[in-house]
Image 1 (cartoon, rainbow over the protein chains, first blue to last red):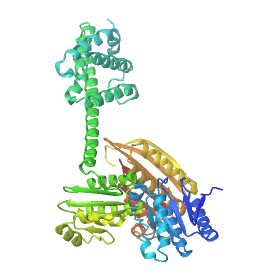
Image 2 (image 1 turned 90 degrees about the horizontal axis):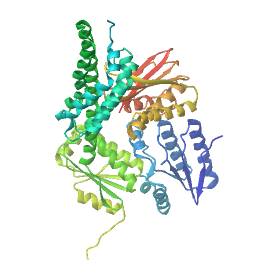
Image 3 (image 1 turned 120 degrees about the horizontal axis):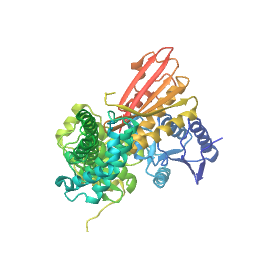
Image 4 (image 1 turned 60 degrees about the vertical axis):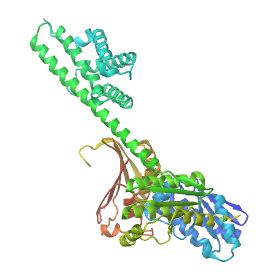
Length: 128
Length: 282
Length: 138
């Protein structure tokens, strides 16, 4: 069975999506990731989609859901590396992922997570 | 006496046709103008006749859209394309085919051996055929021209609004002139691309030089801001003139969540502050 | 379709499983690349295809994707038709509203896909199925 690997980097988790995901694989990632947050006690999740050539409403919803679920499990999610063409298309599609934090790349995403850890529980400064 | 067909006449006199035609092509003052060497012209004439000959032999002279004429059509399309790029006019390009008329008519006259009916018949067939090929050439010429113009328009759009780096991690897009939908779209796409290339965190779109903004352009601006956020970058719009502010509110466009500043300097100051850069006076 | 539009090539793909959606996306990506679509245009038509293929599978119980490469003067286009024999859509206007869904999606499938293409046609009869045709020009 295909799975998208989840890497652990200190107190953060990193997921790099490099395949054209079918819907079942996307749902499995959602399961795996929420489980990993719990079992590994992760405080932050980075979802790297720089290799993704397309994000449709299904994958978009999965990302928004992961972010929401992680929040409840006390972990921050940052979506990193969205390509311009994908961003333009998502906006046109009407999917703007309002609650999801974003960063240009993994480095920046990591900085954002660290800063939000330093700021403690101040969620307002984290959400843009 | 046995009837000679166009195909027979052509086969028999092929070498003559090529020689006379080549001579005509190279001596025609208009066609060369130093843009094509006589060797090139000779080569083109030879290649064309190599493809034209079997097509004529197929005896499908009244329809050039069939598979018999596929290679001839492709050759003419390629020829037109090259001539567009070399700066030829459409009539100069069409002359390539039309100059063949005289040559072929002379040959057909010779080969008709005084049979006026047959000659008239052959003239007509050849006339129609060459007209069709000529028209096909002109059509291909126009198509290539349109393609060239389209591409140039696009390039012009990109050139007309350069994305500039103001500071490490801060890009600015100074927009000048009337914004239409197509221009806004091209410019926004290049801004997004530059953000990725330079890994810049903040983009400033300065619209000081923009006289008016309509609903569509305002929506494009908002879409750009949203797309930038999805990519993980911030956007500041600067230089919003009072009239534009009025229009935006009257149009009911929601700029909520979009940072705006009066001028580029204020926008840069904010961008620097967000990047954690501070200046002190000596 | 204007009188000038001619069909260059066409083909058909089944939409029976989730993997067919992925295959459909990849086919549409390849076709739009071959037509010289810009990266943004490619992404738009691929995303629209993904939405509509999923609709045909989930709401229509499976169907087919028919693709056609069109030529109109110097314009090149890609037309995609998604056909299913599912329950159909009772209220087309409602189905095209942002946020409306009969299933569990975000309700952006149809209305969103419409914004990603140049031409959009929706045909549906209750009990007989749905056909969505979209075209994007280069």
